[in-house]
Length: 150
Image (cartoon, rainbow, N blue to C red):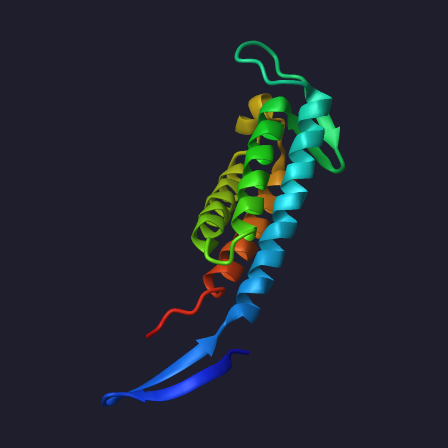
């Protein structure tokens, strides 16, 4: 709930200064947790599957319930670090929201055609569902994190 810090008259207008940091902190925690999860998942996948190669068969690895290649590990490592960077500052919800929207769209595409991504990224429908839900949560939480005047 927002906290009113100050109310004053400025000429003929009434000005209300409001503190919305409670929402921003919650968004930062959610984005930070998602960033940590993706960073760890990506790093472990990269370590287990090895560095990605440009040609030939990709090495596959299992990380928890997920199947990955080095390419997917690298992608998740980059996404995780970018989410951690966004969570570090209260004002960068736009970056995290963008990552959330892209992740949700990617999840929908993977759910529609999971076999197309298995060879290169080593992913299945579970990854698509995870990205859809996680991306939607990140986009929703960061959409309400910063107050916008009407």
